[in-house]
Image (tube, rainbow, N blue to C red; front, side, top):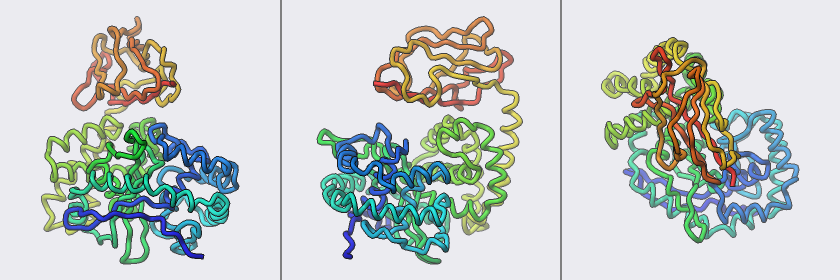
Amino acid sequence: MRTLLLIAVVALQLSAQTTTVLVDGRVELLSIVARLAGFPEYNEPAAASPYTAEADRYFAAHRDHPAVKALKELRAVHGVSFDAVPSLALHLTDVPELDERLPFEKSPQRLDARWKLEPTRAFLKELRAFATASKADVWLKGSEATWKAARERLAAKLGKSTYPAWMARFFGEEQPKSIAVVAGLFCGPRNYGVGVRLGESAEEFRPVLGCTTFDAPGLPTFEQANDEIFAHELAHSYANRIVDVFGFDLDLVGASLLGLNPDAMKKQAYTTPRILMYETLVRSVVIQGVKELSSPEAAGLVAVRDFELGFTWVPDAAKALNEFVANKSQYATLRDFMPNWTAALEHTAKTQIAAMTKRPQLVSTSPHDGDAAVDPETKFLVLEFDRPMMDGSWSITGNKDDVPEITGKPQYDAAKKVLTIPVKLRAGRSYRIGLNSPTHSGFKSESGETLVPRTLLFATRI
């Protein structure tokens, strides 16, 4: 059977390297099946568009297909989710054949480990049947207008990026066969640093960037896409393989760091020491990149944001890379420097764990952190702490558009453990509220210990 080519590309120049921007039919098809299977990350409200609505209508008759049921089972049993979806897609041939590009029994190096051999092959059998029964190639081919807009607009956003060349110099690693940015039109705010290793000297880096903004006709605009996001996902292709080389020592550090802010890490799907160490190295490298390609001030803002997201150790991890930059003659590659970086991170972990036991803890919140269906008529944000707090002292941080309107003065109860904040919420809105930050530490106990910065997320129903 002749394979329909479903990877549409547009060339652009990234520094001295030629990269491509593409929409990949394999990624789109697997995203559709994940969407039908109810994966929350592929049903993000921010991804809603005429394109996703049309996909829902076209594939609705196949919602109970065995492929959909098999993918649900893979999530329940093996944790298949998030970046595992595009990872598998990139390891397959084009729709509708969907054969293995590499023999899966040999465990392809960059295929997400959650794809276990036998259940994955059973799923692929059903996926091929799904593609045939739904005539998926017909729908994908008919989406060319949306794909063309996605390619051109994402290329326009990233056309002057110098990060690919900088990453090559910074890591000093073997360079990939190709780099291509993939527009993930069902991914919403999610971005994934995935790729395929085809052999000892051939690798494809395929960072997937989601889209949350659309123009009046409903075509993707990628207003949220920027150099930093691109750099972050691109860095995963370098960083993850380095972390894997030092896996045992870094897993021990990662286990300690995971205990510093487990709720925030779980909320962001960083649930294992190894995944956390991938993310820690990537965020550290991005801070260094922003420092070198933009300014120290811009890098400082990135470090603060990471801190507020719960990665309280990342600013120190990024600073540890200064030794590597200053001694390139001694360390040919970042891989050579990793024992030093690991030791610095161990010290940071011990220091922060010791300090954590002395700091106040947030016991509960109302609305609950992560609640996606809050009543917009809710009048109060309530925070409960594990000890008496300093009265009249608090730091509520975040972008003005993300924080609810505060309609009155916050008040502690008599025990000074429960703070009630009068607020006005709006229907159909997502809120992000920071409690303390590296530069604002108003939340503190009566004895003066500051609350570790936290970020609360919730959304009101329409």
